[in-house]
Amino acid sequence: MVRMYTVTGGRTAPRTQLAMEALVSSATSAQLGLSYIREYRAISELCRQIRSVAEISALLGIPLGVARVLISDMEAEGLVRVHHPQIDAGGPGLKLLERVLSGLHRL
Image (cartoon, rainbow, N blue to C red):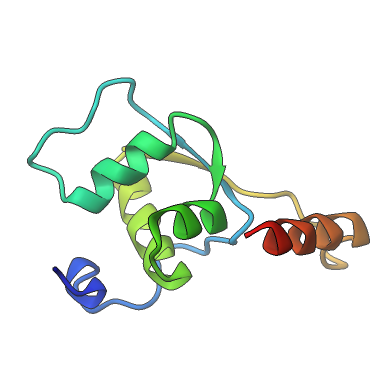
């Protein structure tokens, strides 16, 4: 079993800002080969359907911070597409907060 800090190279923060409600989709239709780490392959497979960062974290059973780092790295390599939420300067609206809370309750 490989420790998560080894998988992320000891990094705890993603290269770019990545909200937990950001949606992620696979950028390739082909399966990733064995030259990629197991976590990249699992994320790529999951993201054949659009999923949120929080959902990926929960489904893979990895901490949210680790998921953010891995997804950010995969985006930099062109393996996934990240669709960032549109949030106005006043902060998230009540509807968004209710959806996030509802999603967290379902986890």
